[in-house]
Amino acid sequence: MRRLIMSGVALCVVSSVEAANVQSCTVSNSAINFGIYDPLDPVSDDNNAGSVQINCKLTGTGTASVDVALGASAGTPAQRRLVNGSYFLDYNIYTKPSYTIIWGDGTAGTNTQQGTMSKAVETLSWTLYGRVPAGQLNVAPGTYTDTVQVTVTF
Image (cartoon, rainbow, N blue to C red; front, side, top):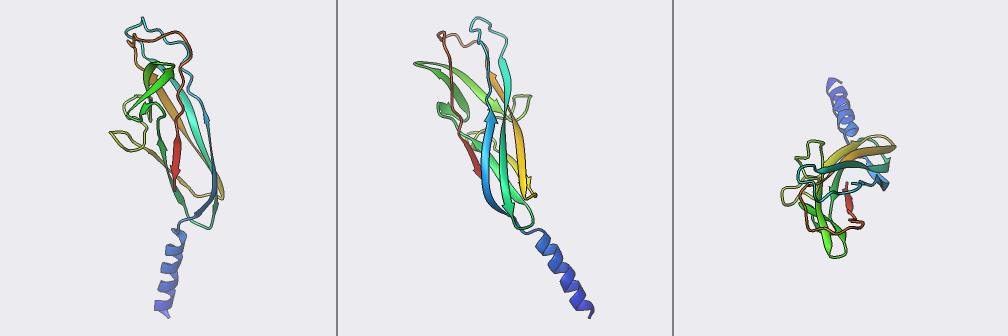
């Protein structure tokens, strides 16, 4: 009889760590707006923040892990570019306000971000720390833009 009780306890532990199934997810964001860039200021980087949110519906019990990668439409994840016609401004997106770890796709020295979900409906949120380095002189007046692709892997 003692052996049956121990088997039942072991089965309960195993079933509590099963992965939940991700039924559906939506991704939303708040854009990083760098404002006005001054090419004549050789010292002050232009920093600002945005965010990305992932809202998922889960089925089953347990947890679901997500991995969030950021691509680049101009440049590479290791060195992104804001574009205005044939002109560009180098910039990047970082995982922390220290601006030391580039948030990318896991290649060329970039990192992705991870999270774990355990509720039937859960939202995870990350802050995007953007920086345009000072001292970029070959720029023209106008609006510079880039579109960053967010890839979520379960």
